[in-house]
Image 1 (tube, rainbow, N blue to C red):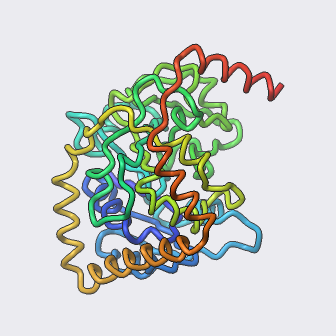
Image 2 (image 1 turned 180 degrees about the horizontal axis):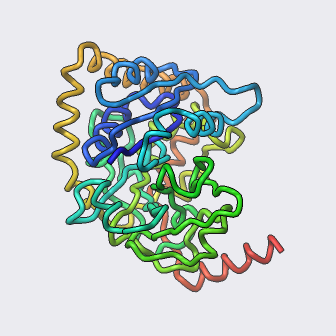
Image 3 (image 1 turned 135 degrees about the vertical axis):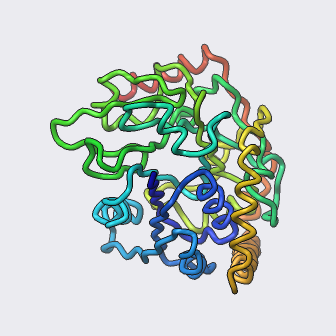
Length: 342
């Protein structure tokens, strides 16, 4: 089974190798990765990863156009998409976490039967007290997450999608693929249960509010903050699909949940380490990774010369972990939010 992973990347050097290795180990055969204006050598690392199924495409959108959407449109027309069986569009801070006894994405596809699209429900992971960027693996360092039933903020119930490349779709989306006009897709949730037909038609819906939590087969570990230092470097870099959105204290508070421990992804660690060992044998790749770490430390040091950034860094450390809201408070907030939108 050919599985294509598509993503748009900028300055992800310290995290890139683990992310590629993890997904290679669970069955991604091809990576179509777009880089944009990298300052930390991510683009050079992508070129060096060609032996691991990585095709690197420099991403140069027209002025004022979305980096991520420009990449996704190119990816849909690419020969790798046309030859794939399944397509996965995720970011470098998202790791597919398969439940036992599933060992690979082929097992997941078999478990859901005839579904055209599989929801990969987010679980938000916090910074776990990590202040600085280190050499440790993301999946080993950040093991504290939002608890079950954490339905607020909205990100706690969002998802990404693994979908059939030759299914009833005509475009990769940020969260879910776009349907061909007049087509209908069969969706399965993260436990393999069929989703209602109306959900398949609701192309703008990117949350699972109103449906039971379902991660019996798979969840998507979302490490959107990592360490406080990495978070500030992420702020300097910006988001690929929402360049105007501020990455600040609000963003941190809505994602930094450290309520419960979740080490379930550790079952994939041996496979990831085996691929990482092969990567480290590629001439120059270890040096590129070390240079990327140095560049991120340099960016952070530069930010710490700005009083406003020092204050923000301190506030991140003070906001050590967000507290999940009670169910009745969540229902009230959701109702008010819906009312505010007519």
